[in-house]
Length: 433
Image (cartoon, rainbow, N blue to C red; front, side, top):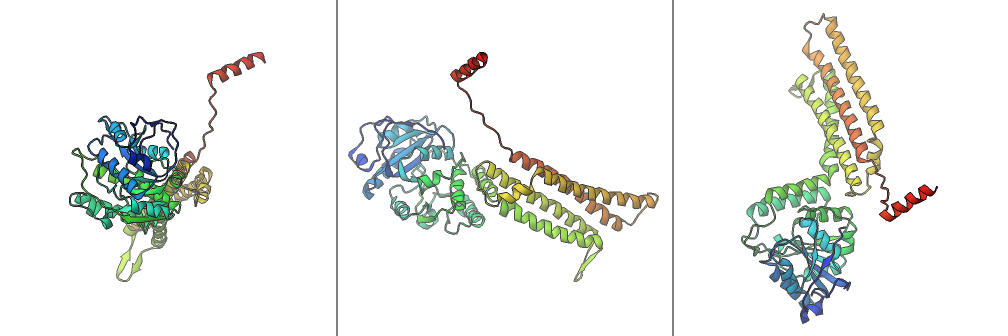
């Protein structure tokens, strides 16, 4: 996780804040543990930060919860830090820019057993934290808010987000990661068990952090539930940090990267199988089905299906290896890929296919030469030339996949860096010897 130093210069806390642990600590040495941390990422939120902090502090007080409010600041220049401290929050510095960077720093610095994160734009109902705390106390690892069940005020969500972006991405997330209980995949207010989430070693610095948290919690078999929450128009006069198409694509890309088996491997395997069956049948001659006859044109496309399918399959395997190397996915089903995508195996398999393709091409050239390089029946020649060319292409693709996979699985040896004094001492010892 990120290393962040708390920046705490709070005035004397109010009686309510002290009672609920929500006031800023008197100094950096305060390590008091609390039950709930309400975490808000912040970048120039001076217009709405005060009301958000006040609502969170009041909600903790009303529920009788020992908690704190933490504002993870991403480099605000509008005085947001001072506003947060003045209203009873603790401010921490988030050195890595971005929504995810701010949240990671805040989670790392949180003192609560549970963390409830929400935007600092006054769009989420921070005055009603009870349902989240209740479900966290019940033992759930992640508690998601559901805006569609709780109510979306007019003008709170753009129609493109409400009717296309959120429903489509939420549906895709449920299908790819078996998240049956999560209907609002991208709700910005959610609670979680701090240590359980830290164990996931989340690393996405941008808006896709929201997807990463849910996806990796699901892959780790964490328990997740939803509670209704409301959404109202935010109180800012400036444009939101969220960019519809850019951040929507980043979320979609993240979902695809984390599901290579369903997005790449299985479609590739199915396409390859269909292509191989079709190619084998059409190489022998035309195939008739009911009133349709498939011939050379169909053979070209079955060979294309084999080539595309093999590439999807191999790219999916490389994606799994990359995900493991970067610590994004676990070792489940990794041994098979590590074994069969070794460079040596890929070189052998690719060479066999290339040789087979060259042999087929040589036979075709021999037939052409036997006819004094004159005209031949194009159907007979295509049945030999097209599969031969496809075999050569697939062989080269497998070579490249093996090379790429070997690069992904290389392990660097990290040598310790000696301090200046240690280096000098080592140098002195060597001269004595």
